Image 1: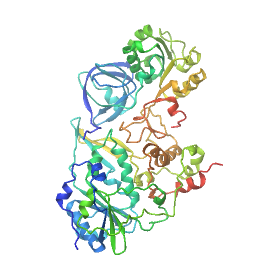
Image 2: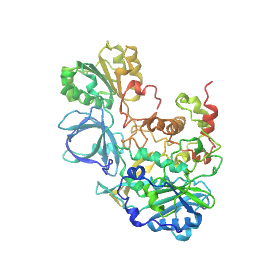
Image 3: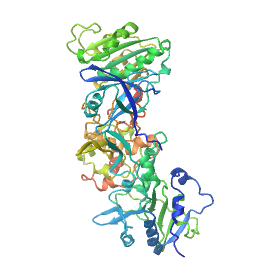
Image 4: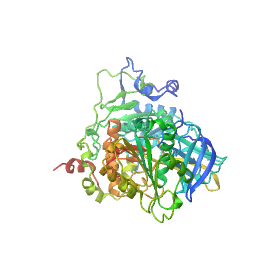
Length: 264
Length: 353
């Protein structure tokens, strides 16, 4: 019997520090996956950590890791040329084929931007399938901005709006200092023909969704990615259960009407 | 007439065969009932000892499952009590090695398993096995560690002719006849209900039961009203029991179906590049259970955690597998420090005005 808990070794091609605590690894792994799915990265002796794909490319995979604990710290110490142990892909990603012909709205906060980057790259590979995309990304400070080297390309191809919670100063992509929710509040957005992807800290999601509903969006136009404590990633260990649904198996991507009203 | 001890050959015949096929098929034309005289029981248990490990409830300070190692110890097997700990530990140990860590690499550890026979298991705990199977043997990600133990284990139940105590409420739960063999006390002898080839291999030498008889499912005076719990999700319904709960995790520890686990890496102190990756039984009553890296806790309050356990047992699992995850063993009520009785609460208080 195949051991689903066993990891596959993949070669690390490159490593880029995006911000003081966030690093992106590019690995030599060609695996079929949907944007929004995730893997479990293992450091023997330290533990495992669920990390979402932040790329969509047939030739390689990228994982964006924020150093918040023992395991992510150990992952961040891996170096190009070395080996990363991964298992997956897991979970239900975004059903991109269902969104053909739509205009896509991305709302991300902090490291929640990483999985959205995967969808953006999917859109770039299937440009003719989508009307266009608006990107609204919020970060705590200028240092925290992720994927700085891609901002020019994104700005030339899509509508890009970056907000910075404090001390924005002069920054070519940003608007006045403030939360991404403020930017959404003041933006003129016609809900017609649009699909919204939200990924960020719980407080950002909680504040943004009512704003969107006020603007006339229907609940089934909103897609959220849920973050939970995950261990097995296969619907067994019970940690990620949200009112009977497993974030690892039934999610992490949910259409908003599927999980609205959950309190945990 | 003598008891036919199972032959080693007939046991070996099932090794490596998927259990489902053993459980479900190959009953063509077989009589499902056998008669075992009470004086034949001891030789049967002793025969099991020769085939593998025998585990049974024994009354010491309390009734608990333990290995019966010598032929004389068979006399100590308990037939009247309700085990404090469920026999879940023989399928899901509190701590289990998943991988060995050697020089910073994970190595698969495949344990050679002997046959194990678990006898005098009550209907509630027998049903718990099917509930665990749904999780651990799901077709997409079957668990090889669980599978190996499950295949090596034979369950021989003991039917409850009378309810064991006032906390049992299995009679109101959706019990299934899931076991290899079930002993039903007929006074002079046991009626042996055979439900698998594995079970049949142990008793094929016994005489067939003459009457067409199916052992009745246990009845209990305590019953749980089978109402759906979704209309009662709001905090106010849970506040009373939550006031009493101290979050000690006794209920989840003693539950025959609590399956949640954590994965931990345990390193050797004298060589930090070696150690074990362990699966450790975890409890949703622990405040750490839903805490993510960075500190956010999705079920930060005890009320949320208490509600989650009961909702998972009676509602969430049923939504997924069309069967309650609670088997009515009553342990979480019987042994609760604070005497919380969720059955009473649901029956009496979960009523819309």
